[in-house]
Image (tube, rainbow, N blue to C red):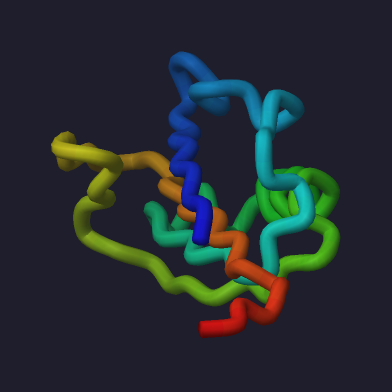
Length: 89
């Protein structure tokens, strides 16, 4: 399994940039954020464009957690790529 987290706010935009992803073929995307940012369709479209194969789950929050930081007025996404090969034991 591989994970990557990105955060977006109105000052810095997406950090790190959405275009720079190691797991663009992730299957799951957890996106949590401030209501006013989640209502802007451009942000959801950017997430869909970056992770086109991912199912998106999420909701609005009163504070977003990214790594060890808690912020307000942002969107935090966690992209998850599951191992897709069968391992033999």
